[in-house]
Length: 603
Image (cartoon, rainbow, N blue to C red; front, side, top):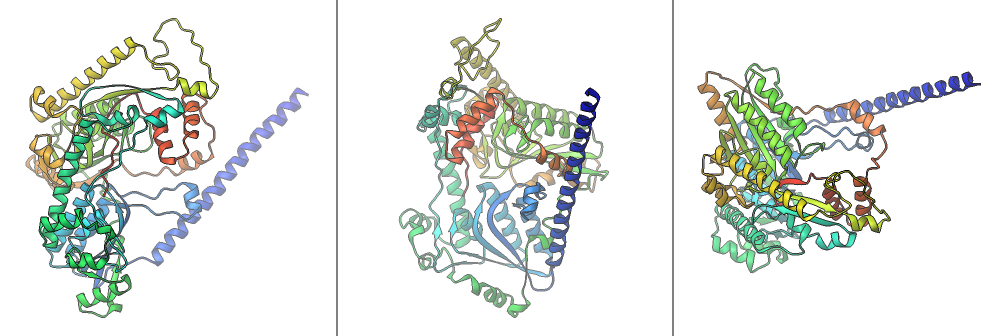
């Protein structure tokens, strides 16, 4: 009987594995088939560059930092969703190639709701200004322009607006969300220790309103950015700052007809989009049917950027984008990035490094590990520059500050030199969902930090000391890297954020410049050292582990730990998705953070 039981068990076990294997194989065949069909369709509809080509940039949606490969998750493939967001590197590459390609005669900007921070839009706008030096025209059209759209479009030779549309240009600002009332309702209290008068990243969790220092630094930040943006718009549109300020502040542009924007010289004509093809053809002096409209991909913008990994002489461009952590699959995962940095340091083929930082910071532990790895790279005597994108603040500045040279955009958000500790006390939430914790331990600190009871006064005091030691370490790192005194760093630190132009005045950065400026600087340093003709290669590699994706799609199961349980209960109490996501992050983030205030400077 026992033998029969084991035989039946083994046969069932083997059968299950065979079935699972067949399922995986069938899924793989289906997915590869979908990829193949998508590839064939792309080839059939491929755009080519020929005479009278117009490069069309459809500026709608998000602009990410770097070219990405499609997300090959099975569900997206089954839904036929193989689109990837626009990348700044891809757009700039396309514009740059269009300037030198004799077949490309014009750029056509379709501004339909671009979503990007000011530094990204400024980088694209600067490249369009360079394009105009080739004596080729730029036309821009929109059904309705927000500030980001209009900022980019204002560089065009002619700006067209739908007669039924309007300009949604009204200065700069944000709505910062404060969560204390929400946390009170679900039974979560945030226990906070911090260093820095302006370190306001914790405020939304412990207050219902913005503090005076937090408001002051945002007033300065937005004021400086708005001054820069409006000045560039006025110079391109050939209007005075006073004229522009008047229509923005007094006339409520979004409520005005398109003809009003024409009258005030903010746009050139109010026309319908269906007429744009003919207008472009007339500008080129050809028939409409002879105009060849192509997207960035026709100019190789979607080709993998810098993949010559076997080149014997390389300059590595290492992307550090997102929040700094130790375990997440998105953002800057130090456990992934640190080995890449050390490999680059030990790789004799790599002659120099440009770290492209676009991060609001995050885990102090992760920032420290990345910073130490970058110091190891410097110890090899190879030139090391930082190029700052939209954000390089707090932990983002921690990993940047000891580079040989730091380049920033005038509208980069940087600084925020300060750290904080934040531990949720979910004891009230636990009681609300019927959980009654009982503690048994040999020592009083055995369960510290606990989600199920508040910290004691001695624990809070010791944590404050730890945060202050971390702040001292941060200040010392900045002082050493920037070659300024400890006292001077403390004057401009305190967790305060600065725009890139002000950071240059404060010597937190060395020079205003783009990613290409930083690459050129490293190239020159490498050339001075005897190396020439370096390939620019992007890291980390964009490798898609197909079988990992398949296996992840087959895995099920959720950890039953108390943290996950309480997080799940807390999120279910919050119906609004955006707020629920913030509550989820409260439970997932490490207790000690070097992160800027949770404010996105989008336009």
